[in-house]
Length: 375
Image (tube, rainbow, N blue to C red; front, side, top):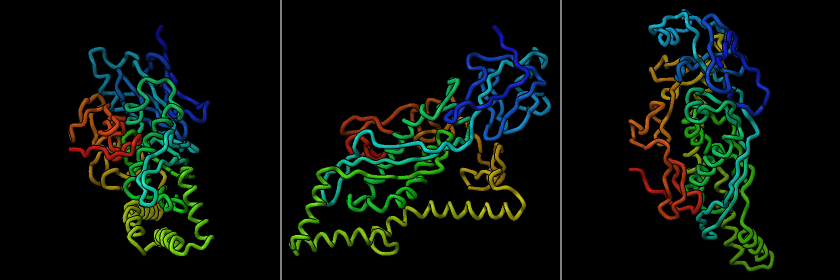
């Protein structure tokens, strides 16, 4: 039975719903001249003939061939402009979804300079929002009538754990360095996580590390060292003091190799934050609202939200799909990336334990082994 629509709108009924499809099954006949009402913190992705035709920002939109040029092209067919449009509309919620949780299902295996191989668990919280609705729908939503945060939270958790594993495997020397460094680690990791989530049309707005649990045997070793110092074993106590001093050195910016390495990793994120603040200040001086603008993923130039191409470098602001390996824009139905040749939808296996990992993982989340270098 056909469904005829003259007004399309959607009011969210769940706080955790990211997108909603109208109609929920099949497609509906929508008359030219009808109304599409998009509320604040929403965008509407208008699909015609199984393809995305346009993206509507918040407001009331009249569907005509005069103000929707993409639809005009799609309807330039033998039967003319009088027939109703067969369409589906995806309402995508662009608000920030907060209080999402991440944690390691299995302990992460790390090489520690003091204790050898150790297995630790990590926990924290993060917040996301949709920045590229077409990429989000093509890569994650598909034909789902209602897409909620619990459907993607497990995947994002695995993505975060993979990056945490890579970060600690590359930068951590001793498990004793972790306490007191959670904020520094989170800020340094955030740009890398954002780069990975951008391939799915998402932005990581907040990322927190709440805790890394020390293994029981490591905690006992730390307690034993403290007991040795209290007993009066001068030599062993001095060695423990040296390890403690190294940890304090890492906390003090500008001293020690560890601090220098940490600052080097944080520098790109700090420079990006400073650039965004400067651009926001310029927009405010011009009497414009910074929240109505978005930065180009290539040159970081500011453009009005909804722009299809960057006015500074011509880069596409809205793409249908990105390669999980190199981040290049590819066709929505492409099987291989035209930049790096990566086979879409595959996951590399660890050469040691054959566990599947994310395409850009450097260390295996299961055994801690180093992944094979990309050719």
